[in-house]
Image (cartoon, rainbow over the protein chains, first blue to last red):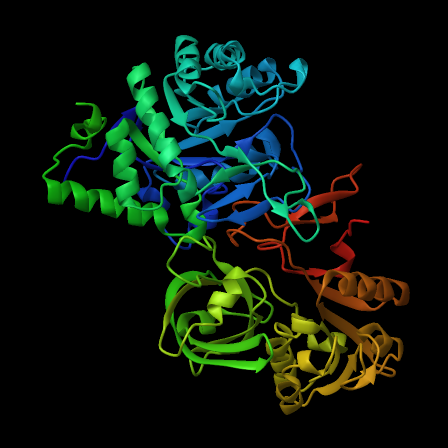
Length: 303
Length: 269
């Protein structure tokens, strides 16, 4: 058996397979299909300071080899998460990563502070693809200084590993990566969804009530892979790669491009056992290829 | 009962009306677990387009034969591919999913009234079978556009259900809508419990009547669905909020429903 354990910026994972926030609920939704204990980590639904109802429907549309979503961060708020959804995960032997979103830099700090003193949360994933309410709704994740400010605010409030999730909707993702690493990120997650839209030609209206929505699924994989490759070259922190990973081959591509860990997102919807199939496929690949430790192939394409 | 992921085999596939198909699948474990009003997520092919599974309600559940039956309209990309599936073909699916119809306690003495609009007939048959086993087969009030969209009537009659049909063009049964059938309160002195499934305008209209007349009523909702497991939050609907100061909250059609008591549902204007 090969050693698949990895260290994602201080977060120890028994294998590199985790879940993309928003595609895995609070974990228990998938318990009928998989053994949650086998996951390298569980990333739960994006959380905000106060509960949110999210966007009106339709929130989802299918596209060739992909899907658009504009859920709008519907979530029970951090207290709801801690009271309702965290306890069932405490019996699971996989670290829990909480993905956080804020309207202001301060909110990110407040969330980090709450999580820092909460047992049973191993790391924070920072979603910077949210509009900055104080600056006219421009996304934190598209301006290096704002992204850095959010990261610093989180960093100052926690000793837990901070993973900043990058938006692909930028001119140069390496610029964003460097800015958040300089501000104290322990690891980077990429990519978030690509901004897209769909139109119903019969009604002559956008399909999604929110008009714009995030594209995910196999359609985005080459873009995500390219960005992981670029960011691996630009920074020295470990990367959590994601974007259209549907099978073990996809996951191994991301690892070779430079990802220490990988997250399974949309594939959870097309196969509720996707995480396990991918884990087993990575194990089989390592055995077949004589890889004794997964670290041998992380960033292999660069060597 | 917990859902499971399984590979099913197509045993029968038949076009029963133009564009409407009835498909029988071998799925013993699903058949043993499923309840009326639940659905399955079915993959129509192994490709990437369409990417997502299709949520389809169970039209028949036979734990003895180990089969489930789907009745569906081949209206979109996914269901058109599903309609090409041949006998012997393997189709992966997961289920049973969602919260189905609620049977009440026998001593409450309700008469079940199945109110169907078009393909909304599909999930009502296993419910009628369950009520029929309780020797209270009930009444089906069935609205459709025309005779070409009336299905499964004989299956209901075989269960002892009294069937009344209204079509908009009068080509089958009475000319009119399902609400016209409801106006006649065909249950006489009995206390009706309405089980409603159909297009949204029909659901709203029946809901409104039920509220005005004080009839007990359950509604099966439909919304664009993705995971079917309560994880992605794509298929939400508005329901009355329990917290004070809030008119509504978002519930998940896939796991909080698809069946709701009508009193829970809040419609958009």
